[in-house]
Image 1: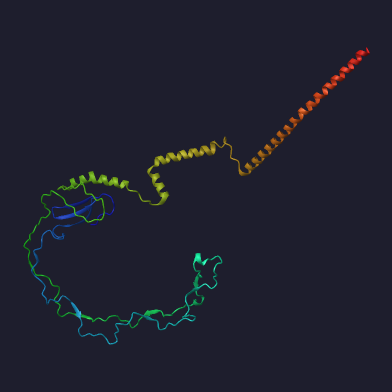
Image 2: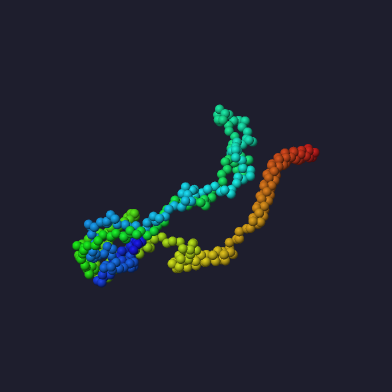
Length: 349
């Protein structure tokens, strides 16, 4: 049977039963079976007769069952030199085909640039364009090819039965000097070593835990204690292929972690209720775009009014010292006036 093509460890088993039957298992599953007496190639028991190594085919032995008909001959009208394809005799040159015109020409509308320097830029050449007169075709016209109705190929004589044919030669049979019959090949001699012969291009192939036992149950118990544990671990380490996209992966994760998903969902629900219902009475609502514009204009107006008030106050502060100085200048004059009047009064008395 074919072996698995993956990179996992596998268990290969051969069971030979007392009735000479056998079966091959892979990972504990039966893959093929047969009999030691009839299913082996080469057979366990050698053949009774063998080919005589000294016998040889006679020189006049005819192996060919068919032969060329000696009475047949090539027909006179058979032309072996006729080509398989010929020009179409019904085709004709299209109207407008120009035989002596080139398919490509220099662009007649192209002009050498004024800043072109032949010494530095080389000789100027006009760009190549399709020849406008070759809209149908230019050059030598050739008819399209078609299959030659007269083509027959090389002539061969028809075959007839060979009257000299004697059949397929086989050497004569002689008794096999090494012939023996083992009716119980299931009974094996003592086994002290195991050889493994494989052909592979893969690297890193290792064979271990080789068990030979007369008890199938003991061999299975050993496989369960060694290979089965390793195989289960390897399967868990294999990346799982994506089956149905992100949604199905999320559902699979939720089914495998129901407790954690339930707690997380409850926490998110409570947080949403607290944010939407409980905090709505204490937390002010964020202003809308129009309200933001109105508040901004109001703040600008208030700031402008504060600036104007501050400027007015500053101007009033400058005028107060001037008025105070003028008042102080007027007070001595008044005192002087009062003193004079008093003096006059005393003299008069």
